[in-house]
Image (cartoon, rainbow, N blue to C red; front, side, top):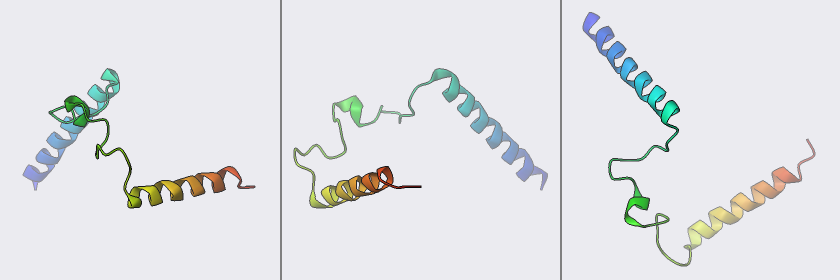
Length: 73
């Protein structure tokens, strides 16, 4: 049982150290390669026209935002 507690404490210290480093650097979290922006891609799909599923999601998000904007309470 002591090994599990020591291991948990070690992982907790590493996570806390990473959080403190993130807070003080004020950088966005990125992978080891820098993400898609590192290779010049602005978005996940580099297509000029969004697909139908994305259009539906965006329309639904717009309707919800409009509803929240017009909400009385």
